[in-house]
Image (cartoon, rainbow, N blue to C red; front, side, top):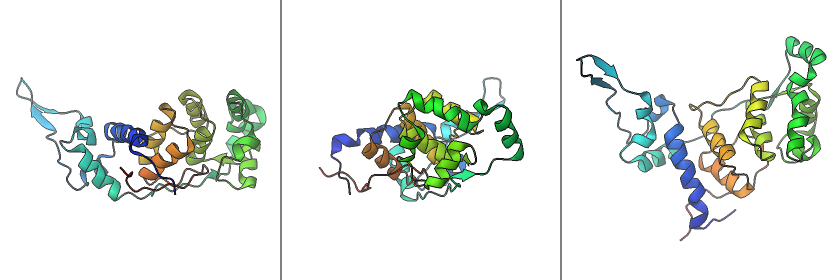
Length: 223
């Protein structure tokens, strides 16, 4: 198990603040123990009923946001299961024949080269079966969203390159997903140190991103 001192928790506190401000699954938020639903309707100067910005429902606007977040974390479990790959459709196979550069496997080598990586070096950083990774690289398999996240984290990618890979697969990040919000924090704040990255993932019970992990301990830091 990896132990951390208090100063090493600053990035987790920053993640908490980011999460409270960004996470927008209001059904889950409203169900948190201790959460107080804000008044969403108000009367305008003209006497008409106005609906307030839904962002006011986010955890960051709670009077005791840290307690609400702690209650949310206490019940967290990674339920966002996805397969790590899928088989390309007939239209995607046709596209690969005539315009390979516009496929994921066609774009991948150029993106990896920017970071001094090769398919072989990246494969060593992923928790994927070698045959599956080889199939993704060759275009015989398409990565699912969690696998693209693992590639981006393993290569220490900038957000624009990560988003290019997402777009190529038809994915985008959602503020309603715990996993997506935490991933966005890691990639935008460039939290790529393995211990720090894995601590953040463990803090929000994220287990489905197939990047090789360090062992982490979710217990509070020792003074």
